[in-house]
Image 1 (cartoon, helix red, strand yellow):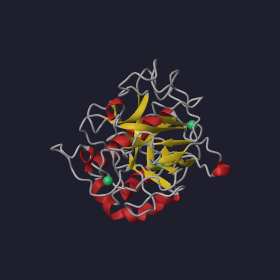
Image 2 (tube, protein in one colour; image 1 turned 180 degrees about the vertical axis):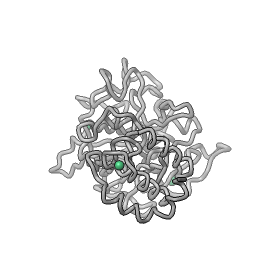
Image 3 (cartoon, helix red, strand yellow; image 1 turned 30 degrees about the vertical axis):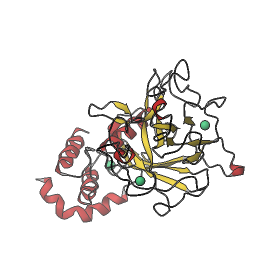
Image 4 (cartoon, helix red, strand yellow; image 1 turned 120 degrees about the vertical axis):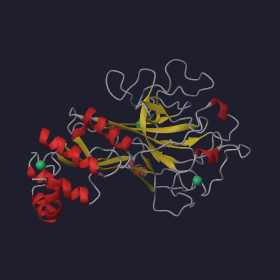
Length: 348
Ligand SMILES: [Ca+2]
Ligand SMILES: [Ca+2]
Ligand SMILES: [Ca+2]
């Protein structure tokens, strides 16, 4: 038979059949209420031990007298979650089909900055005299969620796994300019698939692609009250995001970075800030949490039943016709996904 022809008419009936066999040990929805570590990544972070701050500010020095000396993204917040105890690690990356993933971080300062829940071009932060300058159409700058990249020998895992107390920089803490030296940073994949540092993307005249932009239940341009939850819903139509989450879950650890080009003056307290896990709950502290839903298992086990069988074909087609069948994680649901799925199914 030609399954592509016969499936179309039977999808609705068989989708019901598939639904009945859903849910298995591989179908996991988990909330990590507190990170394993949360780290304010800032050159002047002098907490002892490092990482013990009760809040982390995320901001830019663009426009200040000292912007030459520091990364555009001066203050960053690194979040680390050990997922392996709940979401089994060690499987091939394609075995992690992430259905949804988001971080929720709670604001720790009152009316310290302006809400902008949409992307801004780096061009809005160029000097007005620059020919590429673009006026910012909405007040403020977004707060963004990024992948985490490393330098100085540090990494996600292994003997030099980046953690709460890893130094900002190996060796002398303040070589100036203190730019491009931080041991962990807001990152994304470049065209060659390597994690690159987004800390100076304005100076590099490069747009970034965050995993998510923080949104809150506020009007654009409104001051952000203390205890506002910022939701960073990871965009799973971004193949980079899918790859990053898969590889992280396979390693059993998900590290993420909250960053913003929100403009401040040096030493100003008027910047986005979020509670760290060290802020006592008694005074309102709520750590940044990770919520993730994932099917772990053979990629062709589309209904996540634990076995690959005919029901998965119908389940996949139902998803595909609903526009939710990006099997090859190419960023769109298209015909190539059907063939990729069948190849995996027949190979199971
Ligand atoms: Ca911490
Ligand atoms: Ca803006
Ligand atoms: Ca199945």
